[in-house]
Amino acid sequence: MAKGNSAVKPTNPDRAALQREYTAGDSAETQGVRSVQRAFEILGLLSETQPVISIAEIVRATGLAKTTVIRLVQTLEQNGLLWATAKGYMAGPGLWRWAHLAKATWELPPETKELMRSLAQRQRETVNLYVLRDIWRVCVAQQESPQPLRHVVGVGDELPLWAGASSKVLLRDADRALLARVARGSPYGPGHAATLKDQIDEATVRGFAVSHGERENGLSAVAVPVTGRTGAVVAALSLSGPTVRFPDERVDEFVAALLEVAGHMSERGFDHPFRG
Image 1 (cartoon, rainbow, N blue to C red):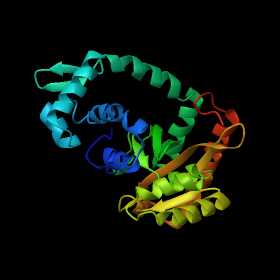
Image 2 (image 1 turned 180 degrees about the horizontal axis):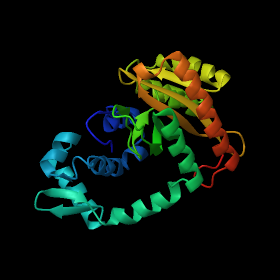
Image 3 (image 1 turned 90 degrees about the vertical axis):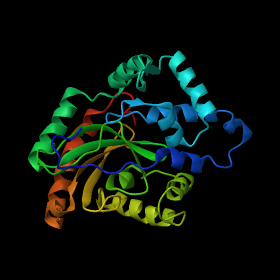
């Protein structure tokens, strides 16, 4: 979470709506697991700003029938993933084990975290590490800018791949099918796949990617690849912040600093899940 009131936090996409679009027309077999997807949508409504949610709020947010919501909530509660309170439902203790497992799996080595911390202090912009997951880029580590006005993406946040410097880096080896799915969820429609391909090719040749206001007006980012043992891209390392602080001369400086840190990270190598 950002400290103070001057953090610039991007608006998260309607993930549930996008997922429904991608699964439209699925086979009967896929339709059979729709309840699982709906259950995850309900869990996804919980956040630091909304730690408790009522049945009525779930119905409004998901558009599901009240009887369906009650059935799903009861199942989640029985499995410890939700916990009933007088004000509604909160995250259940069953999630605690998963949280500890995820932390142990995804936590970066101390020296890697120190590299990111030092980079944020030197360049005075927020450092993020993203990995690719289906049609999303997931933030797995962050060091916030020391400046009052800064870009904030929470660890664990999922952002769409149709825009952003990190997306162009992560999609380097993407096939046409994935690009088509990403483009379908963009504001520009299926035709955006060709634009994405051009941007990805340019980033591949240059060794870095830059974005200015692609998702949020006034926000910019520079990203470089972190590669695994086989040379495949396993993550994108980025610096992001207000566009006014990203003139061309600073972008050049950011690129050099990012490449140095990403090089150290690539040389060190990663254990699972950063294995390439």
